[in-house]
Length: 360
Image 1 (cartoon, rainbow, N blue to C red):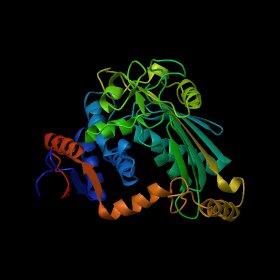
Image 2 (image 1 turned 120 degrees about the vertical axis):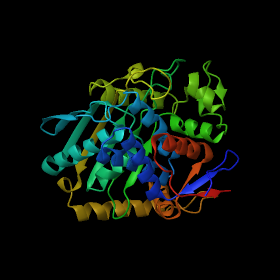
Image 3 (image 1 turned 135 degrees about the horizontal axis):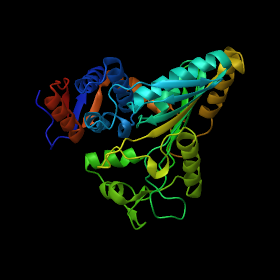
């Protein structure tokens, strides 16, 4: 098949082949195979769930930063343990590598003590927080995940970037897929602007402002020197500050303007911080009793009368779970620019682009 051209919307790639391709790209820049697979799995999972802003479109910048030495391809993660707390120094690892190590540490502590708290410093952008919270929930724990990111919004009333759209995420086990909420504290995640720019699309008003604090529909301009709008006005800005305190200040990672963008030319490591908490369900209630109660609550949510124009109520995480099943079968559609960038990177590194079909 021929590569997707600039005039086609993109191409559809089998998920497993895309994941293997992305892993091979990381291996080509000296990331060990296990770490390469971990990073690729996290990126592709975002695309499977429909969160393309945190998916494989990030591959090129991740690889570029590894090649520039701004991300450590072969880190030595070190853990300082004390009771139910672990302080994990990620040694500037790929964020997915640090994130999954934190998941393992948190769940191991929860297995032993009922609760595990892992603070991570000197890490990098780790994709979707839900990826890690779901991994915790899959191991019969409630998972709480927080991270900080480079500044994209102002404190309420201000007009300068100081706060990141620092996400808050909670996932809870159920008899099926975990119930999970993963929200950034701006009106939309910054990656949605990145994805819109990659598609050559404008953004809705209310998502972002220009550098003067005026509403804008230009994603590129907003990313360059504008501001993202906080979620819920002062509430989102205040929560973003508190997440920065527990993920940046408390952990010893960067905070505020000290969390550097993975884009641009700062020439500095990201220095992100994460906080992960695992609560072992059966230390609070017998597992079956908990599952009966949570399923009863979810059934109540799904059973309410719907508003006009809504077919059925879905609980948090359900739309993404449906998409993951569908896309695992049908494949992942990559926008033309993302496909072209990945193909070019593969050509440069000697990694063949996976099989695909053009979409129209």
